[in-house]
Image: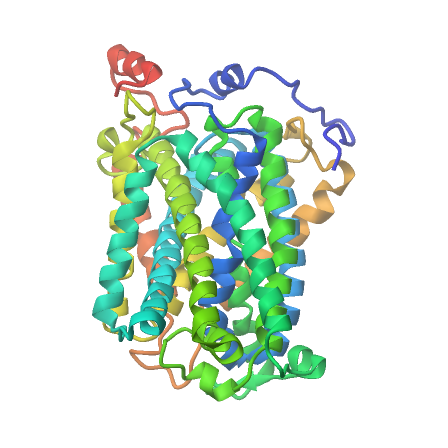
Length: 508
């Protein structure tokens, strides 16, 4: 993708010093710019994490369309998500700030557009932390079951989940340099892990499923009769995994040459994950020995049962450890991204208690209160898992229907702005409009899909609570708008000259 492609009267903004560019956008630099281009790509790749999303929702996919929907759904969803990522990368290049999506929407569409985009983005990011870390807790329980005979319960899984949240909060308090190093390690861990898992499952088992089974077998355990409806709902596995790549944009203020590096980071994270995830899903599905036994596994994690049946206890335990470490990398990266969103939204006075959440550590230049708020809200979002077996699917759907519309809003507003939009140094040129409209239409479709019930009959246990979470956030954000609309802005006017000076020095 050329950095200099553009069409018509649009002209790219000249490449400037990133700190000066941030000041032009209205903000004083207060975060440490210690992340390079690879680190920026690595955080989005780590958040997408095929070893988290594909593995944790694999059991969901087994009963919601089965192998055919998982494989072809992954291929198709990946293509559309790449369009979303390309269009979002173009806007990110023009507006490289921690606020990311909501700042773009505010600048292109006005304050109300920015306000609702920010709340949707925040819901999605916090839902992602809950989904990722709870998934890691499920896999940790399965590992303990194989290794020590531990029997996972909802209560014990939740305790493990809280411990993982605490770990990620502490790691994020050490500063963005440690986060960047961990994400760089995470890239190689993920790629090597996928290769090891797929290789082991291809070589060791004596028996494999046929290609016909892997690419055409349709399974429907949802209770719904319409196969097209079931297949559509089954796309959640892929769409949930392909989310979180806005992390590259949220870390813009901590990335060198962010106008280019953050845009490239988004696109690279998607296409590398697309290829790695397809290989992983194929490797797992070819290696299924007992379909029903995999679905009803005592470990509570179907991929663990596939590994156990194919490789034995020792091999399964080793590969589960690879997956768990990858999921821990993923959750840590998501906490970093979400905390920067909390910081930026608070900097613009959009959150209750904004003066606290925008504070930055003088020692690490990290938004410490924002980190703690992010993990605390994620813990609350996962509380229903103590009472409902389907709650995890609802949490993942919350992530998708919160964050995915937030991706499309700045893209739509950029298209609406036409020639008034001034591209950054990374641009799609003449492809901007067809790619952008494809992205907007796709997001509209999947947002509707993931508000629909996933199981029939619809009961308290099987209801899709994601739509309720979305409605609550929209209602609360609307109510809060009438309280905060006078102080909210991008950038928000801080009350005193002293507070502005303190913020610019990073000692708030």
